[in-house]
Each structure stands twice: as structure tokens, then as C-alpha cells.
Image 1 (spheres, rainbow, N blue to C red):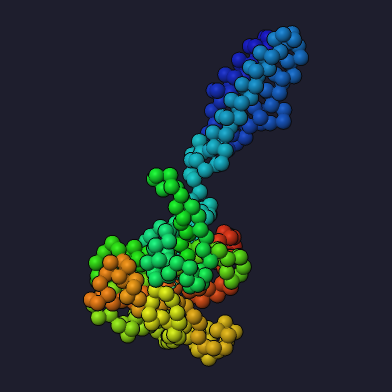
Image 2 (spheres, rainbow, N blue to C red; image 1 turned 30 degrees about the vertical axis):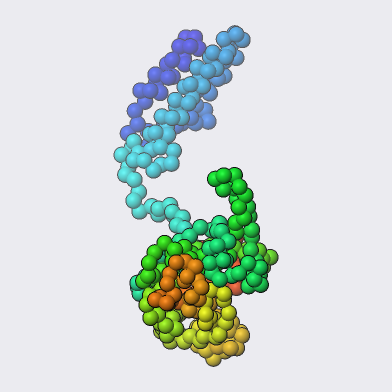
Length: 349
Ligand code: DAH
């Protein structure tokens, strides 16, 4: 029998080989794949083949070897052993499942969602505006006169943008979400109750306490006869929903060009309950937002009659609220995407 016939024989034997038990499967393995398998014998005989035919024979034998491996794997039930095996053994349902890696929501997304929920419950809508903003919406309409030193309060990233007529236009990355209140007022008529969450940018050196971008939620309420008392009550409601029913708020007079009067709002420290600790620097209070009655100039700039309508506005930092909620003391952690940090918020609501 020449080598070609021998290869054919083994091939046929391989194809016909029936397996109906584990023992027979083992016999198959020993015969075709074991350390002294029949295919090895074929390779040994290659020596006797004339050189010019070696390549063809080699390929023929390789084909048998691959066929033997494939048949063995499929008889065994597939390489991974997860398919129902040809031996009739059922898949092992008690086998522990492979873990599916579940992601977690970003702490800022969690807090942003919570702020939105709280205000939605008292009738506020959600509005958004562009991050690349013009001078009018970020400054002028908000009562920042040109060259007014108040513009220095917020270190702005300026950029130039080509308009449709290829003219260069000076734009800014918005420094606060107050720009959105102007857009909302321009495009709707009171009563207005809206909050505007979004990212803002400032030209600051990045450190644990400052970042070149962060997130704010702006609030705006415009109607007839809106008073400072409405503002206080709205903010108290927010603080108690966010930090707990026993939370108190404190308003300190402040200055913003777009509100008059203006205030900064502190909440009683949820860590020490107002007694004083190192987080609140022994004051019992933590600053969380700025607010005030919308300046009549701002109403007029956005086309709202300030003799008929009044309103309040407020703006808060999402990172600040998240910091108080989760005790994150380094702002950089929010944008570093360190999985060890993010995984800590698994399951957080
Ligand atoms: N825009 C202010 C800031 O970024 C925050 C702010 C203060 C918003 C008072 C307001 C407000 O609407 O009334 O610091």
C-alpha cells in the first residue's frame, strides 16, 4: 500500500469513527491525537516520498490531522465545552455564570439628576444653551458693562469663530449657565420656571480646588409679584430635599451684576449638624450657591417688561454639591476617569 492509500484509509477511518461514550471518545483521542497516534506514522513515512512530492503529501497529512482535531473538539462538545456535547451530556446549569461587568453612573450625573428631580417636582422645566457663547448672552445682557471689572470675576476663555460671511467673531466658552436664563427669557413669555444644567469653563490652573471646567445648574423664576420670600422658600425646599429635612439655610448679602439684591446661600453642615467640624471649618455652614432678584436691566435686555414682572435666579455648582454629598475633596477626580473612583458609585441613586 503506498502512502497515498494509507492516508486515504486513515481519513476514512476517522470519518467513520463513531463515539457514543466517554471511553470511546478517549479511544478516538488516543488513536488520532495521542502521543503515538496513527497520523504521526504517516509523517514518519514522508521520508520515503520523493522530494518533489513531499509538499503535496505533507499538505494531505496536515488535512487529516486538522480533521481529527476538529472532530475531537466537536465530539467533546466544542472547545469551550459550553455547547450541548455530542455525548448527550447536558450543559451544566449549576456552573457559575461569567460575571458581566456593569458600569456605574458618574457622580456628577447622579447629582445633576437629583437636582433636576427636586426642581421638577415644583414645576420647573429643564432648558439648555450652547457652551460656546457670545458676549451678549454671557455678559452684556446680564448687566456686565463693557470693561466692567465684574468681568474679571470670571476668567474667561475667549475664542474667535468665523461666521457665515467669513467674518471673525469673538466668542467665549460660557463662564456660567446664567447665559441660558437670557436665552430662555428672550424666547418665552412669563411665567417662567426653569433650570439650566450644563458645563462651564474658566481659565484657572487645575488643582484640587479649581478646574478649567465644571458644572452648574442655573435656576430662573419670572412671574408677576415674585418676591425675595419666594426665593428663600424655594431654596429652603431644595436644600432640605437634597441634604435632609433638618437642613437650615443662611443667606448672606453679596454682589452679582445680574441680580439686585444678591445673596450667597449656605446650608447647615450635614456632617456635624451645624455644631462645627473641619469640613465646615467650624462655622456650622457650607456655601452652596449664589442667588438674587433678577435685575430689572436684565429683564429689559431680554425683552421682559420689568414694571409688570419680577423674578429670582440662582446658580449652583454641581461639583460642590457632589463634594458635600460624597466627601470628594479633589475636583480633579471627577474628570480623571479612574475606574477605582468611579466604581465607588456603583448602585448609587
Ligand atoms: N453665575 C454665578 C456664578 O457663576 C452664579 C449665580 C449667582 C447665578 C447668582 C445666578 C445668581 O443666577 O442669581 O458664579
